[in-house]
Image (cartoon, rainbow, N blue to C red):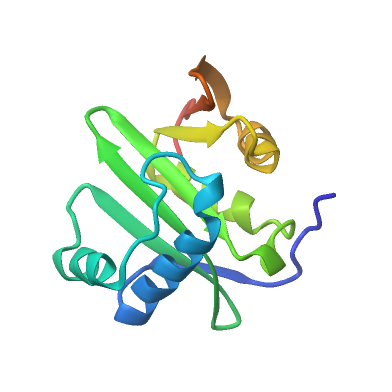
Amino acid sequence: MQKKSSHRILIRNARSIRDYLFLRSLRNQSQHQLTGETQNISLRKQLIFYLKKPKDITTFIAEVKGVRVGYLLIRRSGLNNYITEVIKPEWQNQGIGSEMIKFAQKDYAELTAEILVTNIASVKLHQKNQFVLKETTKNILIYKYYRIGPS
């Protein structure tokens, strides 16, 4: 059951090493629900990511009252903007995922979400936020969002 958050959610650019270490920790905890590279991210690899900040990736942190509760990552590849959002388990089902998606939809007219077929919560979240199923591979559902009209 979806509970609406009574908390004010701040979504901001990831900027500090603490932000990137939070991202690494949460990503490693949630890797079983993600597509793509699914092994643990080492501290070394995360530090390199922080220092080099790839130009094709934009990372955001979601906070409630100064506490990091999730992250949003947008990866640009060709004409696609791939969206990944991960929320700490104790903060799920409070509207934070929807807020992160709406935040991305303001800046990106098209978004692509690759979701494991077993991740029912993520499927429902994206469907609720105007994503449409476009393609299915063996274990991944590809959802697309297209903005209609101005943002």
